[in-house]
Image 1 (tube, rainbow over the protein chains, first blue to last red):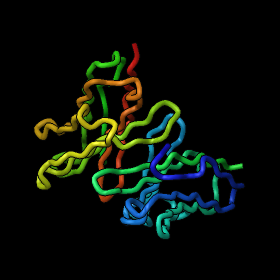
Image 2: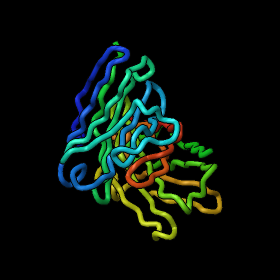
Image 3: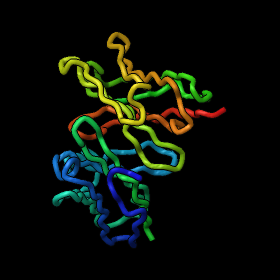
Length: 109
Length: 119
């Protein structure tokens, strides 16, 4: 069982918006503004999409956005595109360790 | 452009040892926090170990499942990162990724190297 809890799957049609949640505790997500989101296509290395809760690295489309409320972080993908179909992982700093969620498989219908 | 290239993966029997290497270009490892992250076949991501910059003392942290068995280190002259893995268990089977760590995030990833622990 992963330290952070994500829904195993999510889906949406092209053009729609979806939100993936990531729930932790006051010792990780709730205690620090160091939540990240990663996109991973099959057979590829993960790619950083969101850092420090809301920051988008250079090259990441502004369709991707992050937020946090209490012990739960969220990734929103607006205007879904076929290439957004992938696995998404959240992570959080937790003192002297980093925790990951179990991953959410996003399907674009 | 930052590039990280892992090597050293392979098949090892339970209880054995293996050393992974990560060659970095586009960044100076002594000035960067670095980390190893692994992914078991068909499973999610798991943080393994982290090393701070030289100015931060080169301190290391480890995930509970590997503490006491794995050692993260770097060679500044070669600009390389290492992960020495001892007393390997079947549950250590995974693709191991070398990553640049900063402010709680893994900003750059290598392509990964597969470690298989099996008799």
